[in-house]
Structure formats: C-alpha cells, structure tokens
Length: 374
Image (tube, rainbow, N blue to C red; front, top):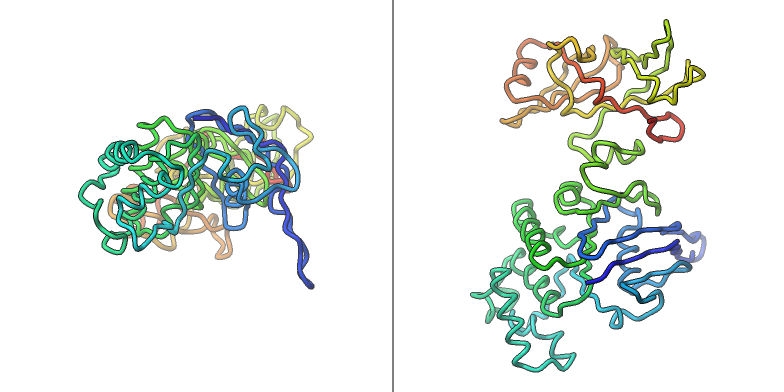
C-alpha cells in the first residue's frame, strides 16, 4: 500500500463561446496516510470527483503535485500509478461471466492462469461471490454487480483503491449492506482507499479521515467525530448532521462582565474564552448553532431554555423531529428538535414543552465569515 500526497492542486476547465472558464480545484493540499480510508464529501460541484480523477490520472492538474508513495505521478498515465478504481456504473463486461470479469485485468497484464485462479479463489469468498462466478452480470442484482466491480479491483492488488460514488445507484437497503462490506474489506486488506460520496452517512461511517470540500477548497479535514463535534465553519456544521444544525442570528451583549448571545427565543451566556476574551465584541452580530439532537426537555437548570413554539411533528417511531419557531412571532426563526418518540408525541398533544440545550453544545460562528469562534 502507499500514502498519497497532494500539494497545491489547481484544476480549471476553459470556457467555450459565451461560457466563462471555471476553476474546479483551488489549491488543494492533502495528506492521506498509508492504509487509511479517506472519504471526500461535499455537495455536487464542489470538486470531489475531479480531485479523485486527478489522483487517478484521468485528469491532469494545471499546477501542483500528486505523489503516491515515494513517486511523483503528477503527469503519469493511469496505468503507471498502480491504482484500481471502482465507479458507480459498475463498468462490467456484459458478455463475460463474473469469473471472466474478475480475471480480465489480470489477463491483460499477462498474469499466469494459476495465479489468476488463486486470486479469484481468495477474493470471491470475501465478497460472497462464489456461487455467482459462472453467471453473467445481467443475472445479478445491483449490489452483487457492485461487489464484482470491487472484486475486479481487489484481485489486482493495487497500492491504492479509488471509489467514485460506488453506491449511488443502489437503493437504501443495499447501500447499507455494501457500505458495511466496504468497511470490512478495508479492515481485512489494510488498504489505502480514497472514497468519494455526497452522502454524509457514508462519509461518517466509512472514514478514517473525513475531508469536507466546498467550492473547490477543503473546508475541514480530520477524524469524522472530531469534525462533527467541532466544525470549523458554518458550512461544515450545516452539511453534517440530520436534521441539519439550527442557525439563529444573534447579537453579543455584555452586562456586568457577562456576555450573552441574544435572539428572539434564546439567551445564551458565552464564555469569554470562546470570544478571545475581548469585550470589544459587544454588539457584534453572530450566528448561534444548535444541533437538533442536542435539544432536550428543559427540566435541568443547567440547560439554556429555548422559547420554542411547536408547529409540526414528524413521528419516526423511535424518535420525532419537532418543527417550530423561536419566540412568539409567526416569522420567528425556524427551529427543529430531535426528540425521543414519546416526547415528540407529547408536544403534538399539548402544543408546548419546555426545551433547552447544554451550554457546551452551543456553537458560535462569525456572521460574516462563517468561521467558528473558539
């Protein structure tokens, strides 16, 4: 296996006619450790697939450097990078059996038949493909076809695996199954993998290292739980989490040396350390972020009360998503609380419930830049 190093990667596409050119990757710096499963996640158009294709050699950067292991492969063709790529479209040969599809790449490289049989014999049980080896792709389900595509990559024993949204064509149940198989496969192979997805559940559950992209730049990279708990920007905070984080515009007010973030329906004391210890921030407009799952019944004085007016409950059985507004006005800030199912049903019945949030679960962002305050 091998580590991957990306240094100041820039990639643009020229315009045509009246359409201007566009810079897709804007100076990407990223280190991927040997044996790590790194997930690139972000909305459509953020550059994640272009970045993966640049690692693969299917796209060449305008500037910057791509290193795989100790080799500079910035302008090397894909065949010289010792990689295997799995696409969302499976890319299987329809006229070849599963066995023949698995063997195809090895035969092109002149691998002896005995070695091909040995590798297929090792990989097929890992992916549950033994009973399908003589079938054609059209006789397989979507999940089985994707496993064949992964198997074809594994038998090559590359130094780097690249996955480009491999589960996007599967239904929800199959996505869950194949996601678990990919994670098990990674642990079994200890392989270096780079995985692209727009699905935050895939990203959070698969990644050793999570890389969140937006507008061709890396917003934040690190361990999934660290990013989820300590987002550095409002974008990252909004992108990870279901339902998304609530954002409330507020103003900093200092009274008797205590700084409050105040908005309709919310008054949160903000520790000076989170604001750099400066009183000069008095009157500054900020954004308070509260995750729906951090909202609880306010029967504990340590919780910050939320003046919440109920409008709608989405009952999911084990939990409820409770929608409403802060304050008493009909145009107040929309707010969502994620509560246990019985509490959600109680709100639906009685119309109100005292809600609150622990001070340490309140996130604070600068209104203009979107950057998290300490």
